[in-house]
View 1 (tube, rainbow, N blue to C red):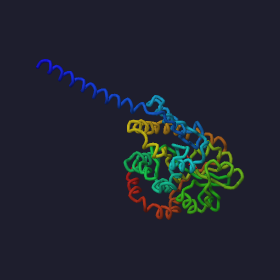
View 2: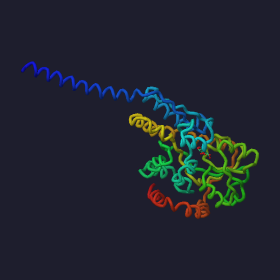
View 3: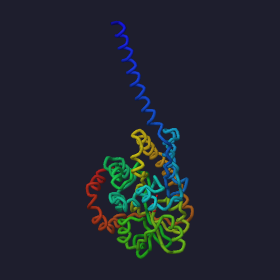
View 4: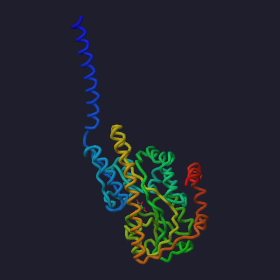
Length: 334
Ligand code: GTR
């Protein structure tokens, strides 16, 4: 009797030990998966705020997985222009991840068109109140319907027009050939402002400004400066027509192959990298503005933005209908 009791206790104990071991072993197995290399395409140079955000993301993933998941950041558009990087991320080409402008995403996911609507946000804090809200996060996660996993938004300031021709007021835009991102709403906006929009990859803008294929383009100060556009387009008119956030994306099939634990590591790293990108953005924007100013560019602030808003009203009426709820919600935010 005594003996059989001790046998029972021993077998119960060993069963408990075994169960403990096996769950420990399976946990270990999840973190000991095969090595993965992720190629991340970035259009901007190595020291640009978005690239520093990408690099922070890569560093955090590497740290948390002890190098098992290795994100390689390719800056300077070396893996192709933004449009081709997104197509590759979407279809599972050689680019697994990219950081792009949400304007570029519009042709892959119409919901992203929201951000191309002119004068949608009043300032950065209203924009971020929206991006961080459930509705803003839902837009990001809904990129999954287009086979892409949206991991984070990055800061991208406000876009304004710059030209090699005189440009100090709205009427100066009339007839100017202006390069725009591949975004139907932006094309309509530029037409409504009296100019002629021309779609072309970001990397071609400098040469096109130099040869006169285009007169003008539009962007935030860090892009205007880092891409050297300011050395050719000497007139910068600060109308701040769009605040187009940047997006960090991964191919959905790749995302789905990761274990829930790895997905959490990747998502947490992306979320944490936002603060780095935003800090770097603030510093870089200040530096760019100073450089632009020192180079003798004529910088004209727009006092009467209502005039511009009036001119683009038909574009908002036509394209804003599908985003009515989101626009109403944004107007409630500070
Ligand atoms: C920049 C953005 C780039 C690219 C560029 C453009 O602000 O960061 O990714 O989209 O604009 O105008 O093409």
